[in-house]
Amino acid sequence: QVQLVESGGGLVQAGGSLRLSCTASGRTLSIYNIGWFRQAPGKEREVVSVIAWSGDGTYYTGSVKGRYTISRDNAKNTVYLQMNSLKPEDTAVYYCAADPSRWQLRVGTASYDYWGQGTQVTVSS
Image 1 (cartoon, rainbow, N blue to C red):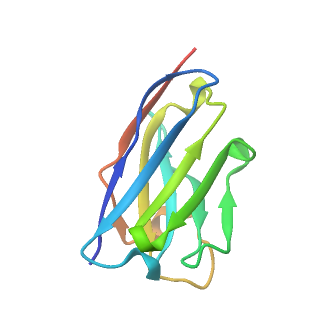
Image 2 (image 1 turned 45 degrees about the vertical axis):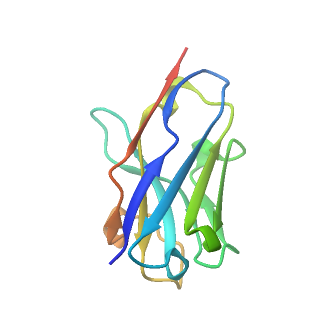
């Protein structure tokens, strides 16, 4: 079993940047595809970005393409989400999650077995 902890959230003005980190303990992160999800108040949790276990495949939802970059450092057991040009509609709790199936980049929450506790991102206008 792997435990995930997110960090790096906070309050930022529109147009600003944040970098989220997802650090694992208990087991190596390198065997999992990792997804970043977000959930705004009153909305369902949605996928933001996914990175393959090897780092050679990524997925971005349309609203963040060109603004967010996902990356990983398996030696540090950490996955990052660099968020640039932030908008008020990016405000949400951001979660990272681990998918043990490495054969494709999956975007549904049900595919992910392990979740972090979330970190709040608030973008002011």
